[in-house]
Each structure stands twice: as structure tokens, then as C-alpha cells.
Amino acid sequence: MKIENIVVSNVLGVQHIDVALGTPCTLFSGTNAAGKSSLYQAIQMALTHDISRAELKREYKSLVKDGAKAGSISITTDEGTAVMDLPTGAPSGWSHLNIDAV
Image 1 (cartoon, rainbow, N blue to C red):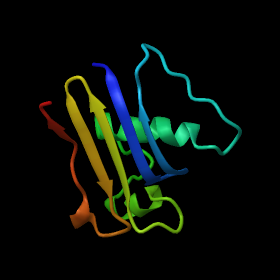
Image 2 (image 1 turned 30 degrees about the vertical axis):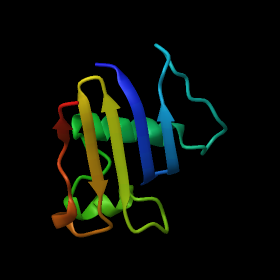
Image 3 (image 1 turned 90 degrees about the vertical axis):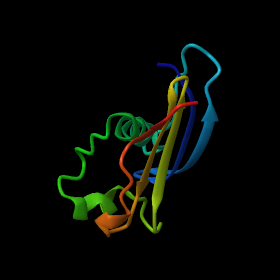
């Protein structure tokens, strides 16, 4: 699987990132608290549906960036797109990992 595009909005420490990956290897760098680990965790959540940072559904709101009402993650690969929407509280708004054929 090759990741082609990453879009993350209002998740953990990431306000917004939209990056197309055109090289075999991409390195993200930045100062402390720039959002590097948050970006990694967002990619992991969307691709694996592992939400280990929030043990209970009512804690999903802790994954949304402070001050935002909702967050979203979209990872496009050569095999499809994984999408995850994070609500600010109501678990009924949760969208499970969704892989669509490209």
C-alpha cells in the first residue's frame, strides 16, 4: 500500500494539513508541538481504526483539536481511501473506517 495523499483537519495537534506524497519516502520535521506525532497518530487511526488514545466513545471528543467542533482524517492510498470523522461528543456521529475502491 502506498499513501498518496493525507488530509487532516482539527485532530489532536493538527489544525489542517493537506499534502500529496509524490516521493517514495517523505520526512516530516518541525519544532516541538508542531503536530508531527499528531499527524502520525491520525494516519494510524484512519488506516487501522485503532483509537487507543480514547478508551471510551465519550472520550473521542478529546481527539478533536481544542476549540474545534469536529475533526476529520482522509488518507488516500493506491488501494482506496480511508476516512474517519471525529465528533465532539456524540458517538452516533462516528464514522467507521471506510475503504472505497479507487
